Image (tube, rainbow, N blue to C red; front, side):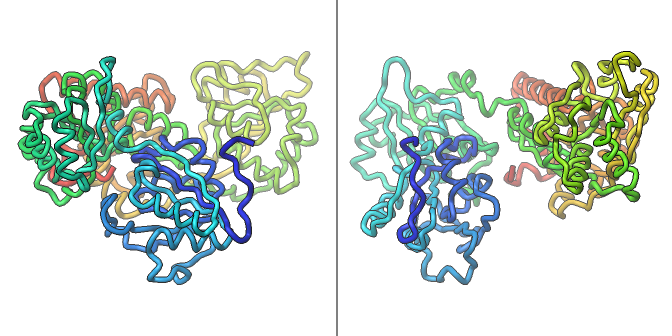
Length: 569
């Protein structure tokens, strides 16, 4: 048992985990935090923290809001606005007066449940966590603390502002909202680095306090808002010029002035150093909202790749998968697998794997039915779906992941070594004939079976359709001609500021036929090469802006009125 592994919660006292959710990037959650979240019966957290941790809650846990999300108070001010995630409770089950965190935590723990009290940053720096821990101790409720990345440390790291150097200068942390005159005097007299937690509209006042306390007005300063998220933005100035810098950038005055920021004061925040160390905001697609017209299952690895470039992927299904109208052909083919009718089965999509797997389960079969049959997968994603089914494919293209790539590696039929000459090919009703024709040419007999039908998906939500037509997306990735036709059909034509990226010439031709300007084309027909090509486009666009001395903006910021709106990505 590891030091952090605890016995099951008792029926009388339950158990509470005080968990640091970090400064905003879900990737900064610790392994222990993810483990605790997956075992939790109840989560108690502010709304913005809930957005970070909700994906790790166990299945079936429902969200019950106990406050108005629009009235979330800034960290450290007033009583926390809370949300309860609880698989059994309902809004009526939470008393209207029981809005404070300690009460919610204790009530759930007394019911014998595992409670996770998640806070932004680290519990040790949270205003209320210590009081809630004392309440648990007084009531005899066992608890543990899972540290998190504090915003005052994590945000400068993402902004490219190191806090220390080989000379070992002091680092002081100040919360401007609670700092006393004595505190300002002490940090003003120091020549070390000062990390100030404050709000956007109070940065200039904090800078003034430091100058009044003895810091020189030309001391470098960096200010970062929405740190560690794809909304992050950093400004560099000095203590004496920060107010003017924010005004010229049209950041202030603003109704968003109460947004929390981290300001770093000292030589480490100098612009010259940030140009070299700003690894996060300089990603090629940083903050780009990219439309991926595929389902979450299909787009998982592609979306992960886009996130690695700093993008915010948004999956919109353009097709829906339905069973074939006449299932008899599929049923005969699956029975043929069991009776030894086939030498090979070739899967050309994840949906084909799913269709065969569902038919197997209908007949009470499992992966053992593939014994003695050679299995081919058109690409790595399809191969992963087979492995999840318990089947390791014998053939995956070594080159291009497509029907053509599969044919290049497919062996010709040899009557000496191949006792059976037949291939089972389960696929979509609208699939091309490339693979069938190629296999026949190699001497194989092919049972080309419709395993599933593809139909146009339902239209996405109104806000998504408006974003597509209004230029709210920075780019859209088209992975086939059908995704072009279907997206335009269910959501409308993307705005002309949106970067259009196509997987190949045929898809690009379809996009142009629909009046779209194609900006990016993959060097080969692969979704991952398509994402790489888009990243290369974004990197060149960024470099050109910097060379011209222009601010680096996203394509969506070019549409009329975009600069006046705060991005929600």
